[in-house]
Image (cartoon, rainbow, N blue to C red; front, top):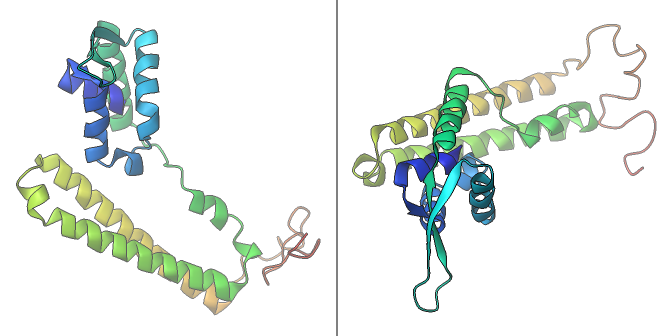
Length: 204
C-alpha cells in the first residue's frame, strides 16, 4: 500500500524518488518497507497491472530510471487497501510476544529484570519521539497528521513501559503463572516456574 500510495501521490515518478521518499519517512522501521525491495515491488505492481511504465530515461553513465503512474486498477486497489487499514484493527507482529509466551522458561529474577529494561527502552523511545515531535523539523516542515502519528508512537511506548513494570512487579511477588490445578494437568507438566523445563536441562 505504501509504494502504491506514494506513486499515486507523486506521479509520474521515478523509482529512485519513491525509494528516497520512503527512506525520508523511515518507513523501513514502522511500515516494514525495506529499501532493497522497493524496485522489485514496483516491477511486481506493474506486472499485476496496478502501475504502468511511462518512460525509461538514462542520463550519462547513471543507471536507467523508469517513470511510473498508477493505473485505474491500481487506483481501485489503493482505495481498497487504504480503507481496509482505516476501518479494521490489525494486530502488529511483535517478536517480543513470541518470547513472552515462554515466560516460564526464564528465571523469575531475569524475567522481571528484562521487563524493567524493556520499560526503560520504551521510555527512552518515547522521549526521543517526543523530542522530534517538538522540533522545528515536525512543526515547520511536516503536515499536521505526521505530528499526530508521532503522538500515537509516544502513547504506545509509554503504555507498554507501564505494562512492563506492572508485570515485573507481579513476577517479583511470586504469583503463579498458571491457575490452581492447571499446573498438573496434561500438557502443562513440561514447565516449572524456576526457568527450567522438567523434561530436560536448559542445554538440551
